[in-house]
Image (tube, rainbow, N blue to C red):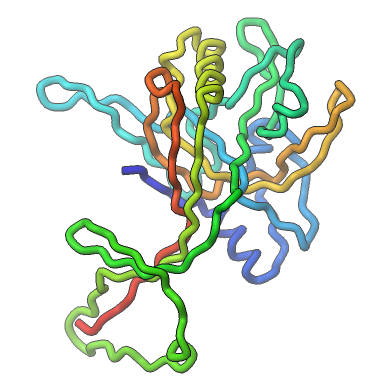
Length: 276
């Protein structure tokens, strides 16, 4: 099962948006600071970042020797104060002499120059999410014996005139196995071409595509800023970019090179109480 850790930076962004207050990102909380890309950019008081990007790394796992000396993979879980992947990797590396085309660059952000084996490359550390067709739904979910059923939650007139749920003065006020949820299903697909880019990154950095592992994913909020590049084209860079949620996973790209699809449920849960 994927492990999800919400960051304090995402919670601060959400709170500022709810209250209509300016969102000021601390200096050492942005990926822009981590990679030295537009690190001093700030937002207007009425401007907010949006979770439209993702980063990844290969530092979210370790190998553990179990029974009968059998090794297995264990997820290294992030903590809410973490502001970047343990070992971030770019989605794409291109020699500075043969960069992506402007059309290809539109899929990425956090563009910077890195050096490996005395050769310089343009690295792209953020990939833009496809939010087409994503909708926000309210649901009521029931969990019994590990099985979850969901139905849409539609408020009625009774919700405008609620009555108290009397809780016991003694004993336990137990949680029902029922939750009201806000859910937005976000489908993330890495195509065969995306996987080949990741394998190429691993060959350049490590000289071995066995290191092309996705074991930490960071859903990232950022604001767009159009900047000019040396080839006289424009690039839509991401500024004030903060990881709002880390997702622990394990994909060895060499063996899933035909493509990877993941479904992330973005939202919140609110438990329903009953008298115990």
